Length: 489
Image (cartoon, rainbow, N blue to C red):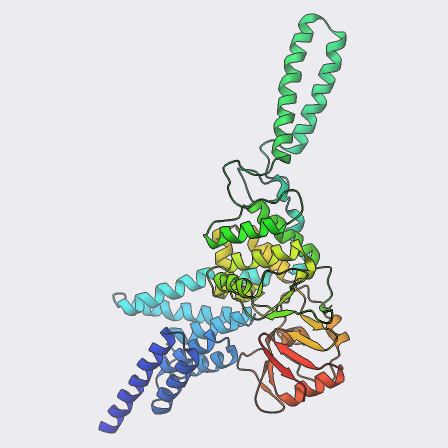
């Protein structure tokens, strides 16, 4: 009995230390400590669920599902087991499985509410879970096929966004509808003709009508062609050209936590979408001899880190080009500022900056890790849909000077994949659960040779021998993933 109590105390000590590491964002250390707690006492569901949570933070969704499932086996009534597993399924895009977990969680917490309505801990968990369930609109995510929806970009007219309604939708932004304004001008012209052939009394009436209708038309014309509100003091795009001066002003505004007018945000995102969708899934980059080229890894919404990169290495330009290799958004509090800055440089000079898709440029990840909520708060729901469309246009991989293969994730579950296979991928969709596109975004290198299951639960882990064969088969010399490189030996 004393030995059993000693084990329980020892396990709790490991758990407390693990919690401290988790709160300090040392997730790998937390996993090690939760593992030690489990080794001492494997019959505590909390340890399994907590380790699942740490795996979630590291995006090791496969391991998170395994641990959450074990927590449920140990205690079928432990709601957080279902919650953690549901969150992992959601992040992997497995919406139906996630919905089942959250529905099971809801059934359990309803029982808890009846059994112990005054239990503060149960009430807290109930509110937490109910909030999560309300936030996750699974039915919307799995109901309407993408092919049946009109692209949101086709419904937006950014030039009409001046005061009032700023949704950006065509046909809904002007106080005076275009059709009415055109009709008014037509009637005014007809009335002017009447004035030439009528009596003085009729002429006076017609003159008043002409004046009013012309004023109406002038009001519409000024709204349609004017820029933004006079009181707006932020960065402005003159015409259709994004200039370096505009980008610098916008970056300085963002640094001081000022907002960009929605008109210009729409303009930047729509212009970027037009450029990206014209690119192939694998983009070839040529860097002349004697010139340099910078590849950057995950930014994850850290705007001030992005500013520091530019301060140390210079702003993007044709003479100082960059490739940002995915995961621009989520986690950080300034994901919108990051993505608008990168997109603005792309609009300013397409060859100054190249952008690749990461696994976080997807609806499911943006829903869980913050970008969706940030965009909805700072801009509007329309932008949430628009960014999702633009992310589907991002290329999946780049090859620099026919020798350096750059991708966000990793390699494939089979040998023999050629660069032509990557170019042929139809990328204009949310990332699938398997296949070449999924593996390009999600796979990871491993120290051992061969292939193995991924801790993420998506993609796979691959060894140096797999990398070497891929490079040889495609006449490449180097493989770059984010900030790590694996040269052929």
